[in-house]
Length: 117
Length: 117
Image: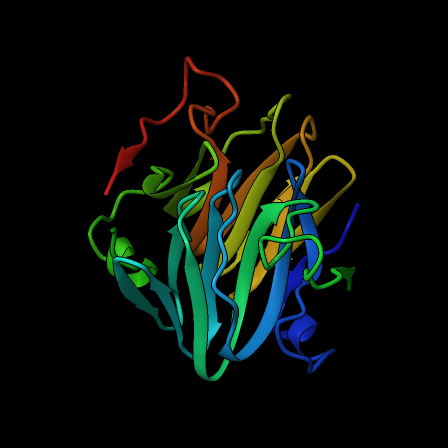
């Protein structure tokens, strides 16, 4: 039997940005925490929705038809195929869920490696 | 384009226990908030893992080979097929994720209806 996953504890174990860490699995999806700062690349995922939950800080998700800004305890699901660019003016801590193997940039050539912590 | 989902705001709109409310969709899954108090029924889901994230309060997930207790910011995924009984000694607020149509009791005959809020 596995232990409970304390998200703040997991986040305290690393400092790098835009480098998702896997903390649990759910039906073939990776449940991940990530720290983000600055602007990510514009990208989309043709085959999967993109789940964002802010744990700490603030995240703006820019999309071609408008932005959504999330604070702590707020979530947003970017529908599959929708181009988006996450932007964090200050450091933000996020919970992400994606099917295992999904490249975070939408492109396996540029995707971050996802370690389990 | 949909709005950000503020989980506390959603939770403030209802008071009943063990009645999950759908707040978003993710790849055919329902993303839900629920308030819980007391002991739920022992059950399992043969075809899906069961995702729990505590937003407020404390939840004990009893399983046949041991219990896991979750506080705010802690998550646990009960693997598919594993019998479990969620117990909240005081009211707990949870984020749940399940494939759409999954009965919360593991049995469609006794499952709660899930409204979208």
